[in-house]
Image (tube, rainbow, N blue to C red; front, side):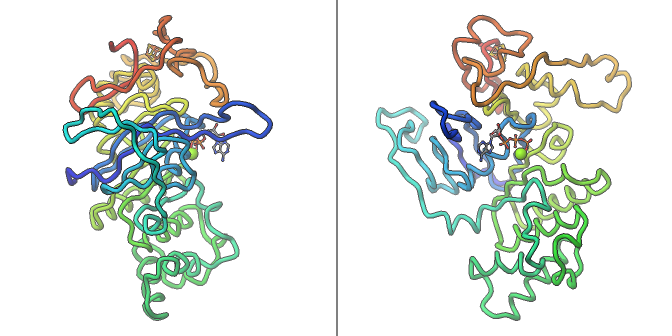
Length: 341
Ligand SMILES: Nc1ncnc2c1ncn2[C@@H]1O[C@H](COP(=O)(O)OP(=O)(O)OP(=O)(O)O)[C@@H](O)[C@H]1O
Ligand code: SF4
Ligand SMILES: [Mg+2]
């Protein structure tokens, strides 16, 4: 892994306005900041509806951000124009940033996504060859028909499919094979960064590790950088260098995978970890499962202050009043919680 930062996300928000309802609407992503180094895998976990897919899509500007800034490979690709500017030493300057929204076409090649639901993400009327070929055509990556056909064949074999599969339609494949097609489509344009949006959760357990291994091999061979989204920590802990934990649109903890699993510091991460099965029966017996009370609140009307306060066993009056800021408590280990000072 390189030390160079490939992606910086600063104070990113994505709200979906709701027709006929006053106010900001669905506050799906709330003030999220993090960076990903070149060649790194950042795992992103959290309960269903906490905003993982929305965050992934907003980074790629498949959803236009509501506010914040996105910097890819040193270039600002989006800036809502009211962000804090820092000097070379990280000191905040009094001026605010300028509005930027670049044409994404060149970045669409570099920044790809593997979708959560493989069957829904493949056009049923197109053959697999056409699906992969379309990506090659949009970015004009083949100069002749022969070259294009050879690229499709090579992509199919690199994801473990037969070259004659190019003439088949998506419904003729199993879920695992459809996901391989989705991966081949993403790889067709020679990307640098891929949002892997729960690439294995719709698949049979027996197929899941094959796909994960394949993604890991590709990362090593091609130097790819991943944002790897999953529901639970057990899926991402082995493949991620670092892990981010989301709750109701906010990033509540961020740290090295081993450190975050061994020494979680945010109350919500502790809850998530208490639900992960441990193979050692002694550790498993000693570890108390924490069950959260109440349902996850609606992002249409999120709790004030810390969004977790309605379910947090440690909540204090201050937690209702002000939202905690993500701070670094140990080297590279960040959390947002008033308990931590
Ligand atoms: N296009 C949209 N319009 C309005 N609301 C949306 C839209 N997309 C997502 N949302 C809402 O934003 C919130 C976050 O959804 P999102 O799909 O990002 O969650 P998720 O963490 O990916 O969930 P899951 O684990 O189930 O995939 C949800 O409340 C969802 O209903
Ligand atoms: S800020 Fe308060 S409510 Fe939020 S996680 Fe920390 S203790 Fe719990
Ligand atoms: Mg999702």
